[in-house]
Image 1 (cartoon, rainbow, N blue to C red):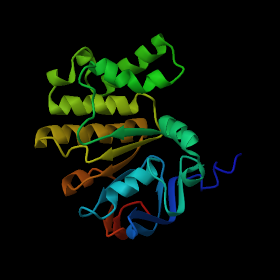
Image 2 (cartoon, one colour):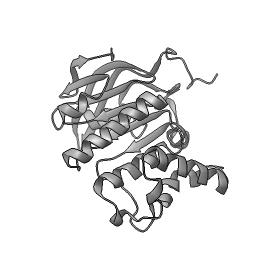
Image 3 (cartoon, helix red, strand yellow):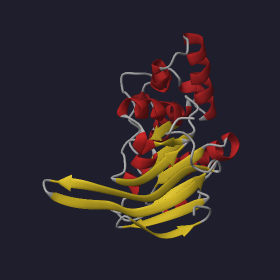
Image 4 (tube, rainbow, N blue to C red):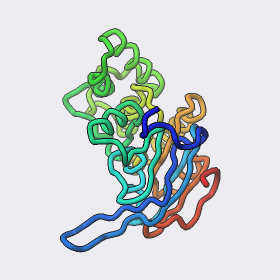
Length: 239
């Protein structure tokens, strides 16, 4: 066991203790998160809510290993993220985290298949193994018959499904979703939320989702409300 490996409780996939995040603009300190502590068990579906500027996206970035805390401890999937050097943090992120964004972030000149395959090109999987995983991921999101379509040939909902397939193709421990339905109409938003619920219930994926939509948050097991970087309310299993 290395110093960055599992000292957090086995039941807590995500553990934050007295986490502070401060940004600096010239000589001015801008506190974004202030003394936040919480545990999230593996297999949970957590919604993060709060007004703009409340710290939701910052918290998501800390959990995903995109950013590091100014003070405090962030443990995710057995690693202390603040203790990892940039190269090891990037490797940890590639193994453990799948990202879902509001604007899909698909590469327009690549087909759905090629977009989903992208994360696997950084692994040691051979072509046959990559093909098997990509087809499985596209099948899970209901787009196995759209693998040769380019993003401009797909609807917004289908593009988001491709993005979700790309997020799950490497079988990550954790899915982080930043306003995944924010750019979709009501029908497609419902379908994406139902898909996320399926991934949580049937595949056991832990999901942390930032949303402004109370209806979307209702799909989660628990909702955490932030106000000016402080946890002001929580509903459900997060403690």
